[in-house]
Length: 91
Image (cartoon, rainbow, N blue to C red; front, side, top):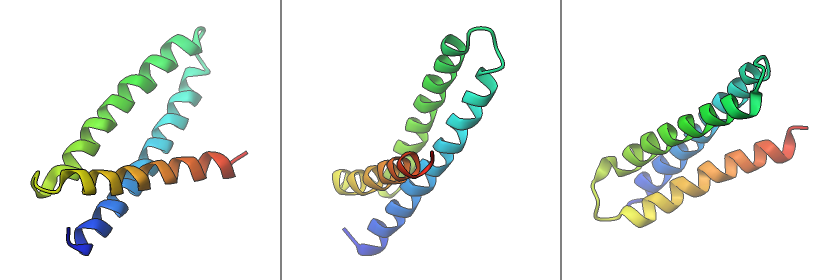
């Protein structure tokens, strides 16, 4: 795999992780205003996460399928790293 593609997928995965954090926090804020926040908020977060997964898959596979595993791993690690660091640092 070319280093440019590896770095590009890491940046893309990190950015999508940041967007998912913004989305999930906004959904939690909106769901807390409803009478049953667990049911409605959970449903929206699950649906949104599935949509983010589809976007993530399409973004990672934009260069073809010959090196799918390495690109997918680099993007997944950066996505997870952004989310974990955010939730560990934020109170």
